[in-house]
Image (cartoon, rainbow, N blue to C red; front, side):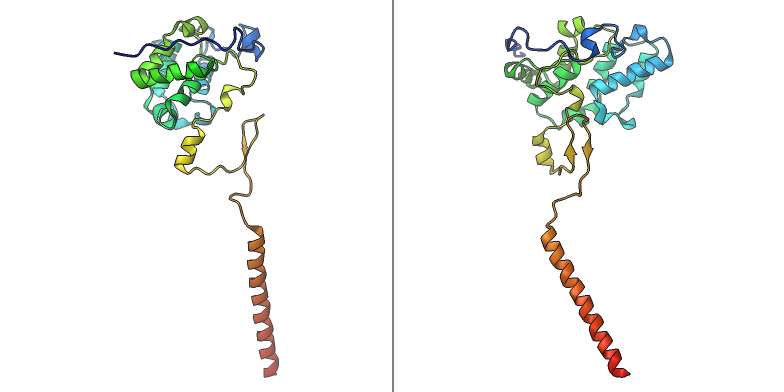
Length: 241
């Protein structure tokens, strides 16, 4: 028997701002992709790209991550946008790439943002949904979110989810990496470069930390040895003549 979702309340009555991006102010914004507005193959492809960008995130939009079968069904209108989103999140490639590296607690934060388009209300909501993942499993958790009344009211069957609101202290959803610090530390991944919070790019630096003092000393010793050998060779040649 599944454990029912724990009750939680928003931190405040208006815990999200309503002034983030065109999606908050204009329902006809071109940043909102609806299947009924896609009347050409190019527009359908843009909608598909928007779905990948929202679910896989920009860092994971690679050719080998594409789900061609789902894309074809959507282009033929044999499935809805909602079905396409569900298929992306339940795909084996997505599970390996995004679900496996994360704990349940972080998955809740990530997928409330990616599927419902909002940040968690508070820690209580994170705990409540993380328990649901543990008891229902990943697939059922996805179904509960996508089949929820909140998803239906916000996106329905034909709209690609988008970031509806943003907490005043949050960065955009697209800046959230696919794995957290705990996975990075366990995997021994070395962070190289500096993160630019405005653009979301990593600029490379000179690589691992280098002890330039020790390196300079070694180079100095090598140079002195070469000079010494050169002098000995020169003295030897002089004595011959």
